[in-house]
Amino acid sequence: MPWSIILLLSTMIILHQSVSGNCSEENDTIRITYTGNMGVVIESDSSSVWIDGLHRFYKTEYQQTPAGFIDSAKRHSGHFKSLQWLLFSHVHSDHFNASLTKEIAVANPEIKISGAGQVVDSLSGTHFTNAWNRNGKLNTDNEVVEIEAFNLKHTWPARHSHVQNLMFSVILNGLRITHLGDAVNDDPAYQLSAFKDADVLVIPYWLLLNEEGRTLMKTSKAKKIIATHIEPNAKPDIALRNGENQQVILFDVPGEVVEVL
Image (cartoon, rainbow, N blue to C red; front, side, top):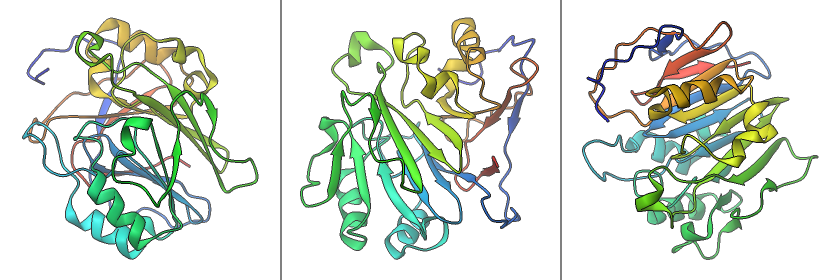
């Protein structure tokens, strides 16, 4: 859906998150950095998790992962110096590329990878966890980062009902960050704590383009909503706010970052 559509959102402030290179390096600071399309790396000083971050050029309307992020992940440097998990919401080529994922896994064999069964192509030999139908924790409470995964229907089910889309919830330093993948407006998963009690939501922007989606966002206690999956060069210029307590941030340029703790 093009961004030329006029959005009459009288109660929302959406902020365009500018690229920042001066985030503080305090202990326990959690940063979320945009890596293209719906790709985000969630990092603290002790751990990082990369969601939907490895994909090549697919179509012009999708922002591919810049080579710099991929190179840094291979070297375990920068945002990825403490990389523990690679998570993929679903198998589509604007969210996942098997050969790139295998390259990262070969360079860093201790990294764990998770997605639905449809994501396992060419990933044999890696620490892969099939998250489809798990609907709960993927790892133990005594690890630095907790990962939860829940089935959540892919948008446009008339065409994509076969696609196994996952909602991942990352709990790091007591903060819950939930990534919806290519989500629909209505699903039982939105009644779960992973959504309702999230501190931060990472969503596809189309959930803000209709009243049903905007109302859905208000059922979560999330203070920050990060809108992604924005077409490159679309230049969204919207300043809105989702109620009294929800800040909405647009991520559309790789490298944009926000501190959340």
